[in-house]
Length: 277
Image: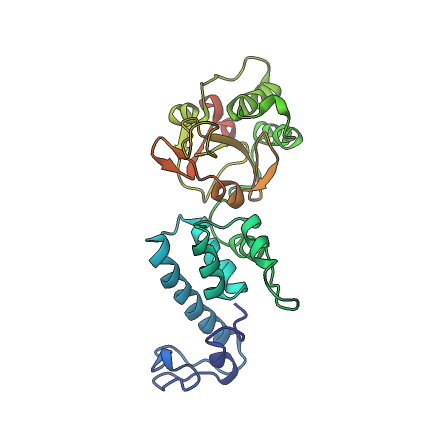
């Protein structure tokens, strides 16, 4: 929460006392919280929280209500904490960007002057502490086996282009034997059959993760098939294309899949709870 350079940095520099006007930051008005001494961690936390609150209010006017599950939206605001919140907001709004991605962040970073570039992956660093997509890091031998095979085969092979469900099913068969996986026509059908939870805060290693995917060729903004990957632990997911951070993977998918956009949830391929093996 280093906040001395934000709009409430005066709280860090001068401190604040309960019940007293905050002369350095008039918008705060009378200080309602415990005293915060100058140049202390508490002062920085208070100032940073005020700045993040302003960011939430700024972005909610554009994005609508932001819930605790909206990790991609929260990451946008966290990135603005590192850049200039209003400049980052205006840039994203002008381009219709509604969820964080490293590509968008790096594109904005390139517009900044030397010496003021910030950190393009700041949001990922912050969201690593957010209880979203952290999951459990251990798991059974079966869970780790599937995760290891998925990681080794996230190679963007032309064979699997637009066939994410086939890739995930093949990884399962490689781990547990040919023909072991019950096959579904699409990731969406797989999700309907085997989805367990929409909670991204405790995903087991080796679980399948589902999202709406990217626009399918010839279908405009639609993708009725969805997208599936395999959770590796430590906030990472593999799909047929590569290994991603789960945050970037989920927030990058913006197609409309049967009325859903972005993150769908997690489940077990073939309905096989590998944690019980």
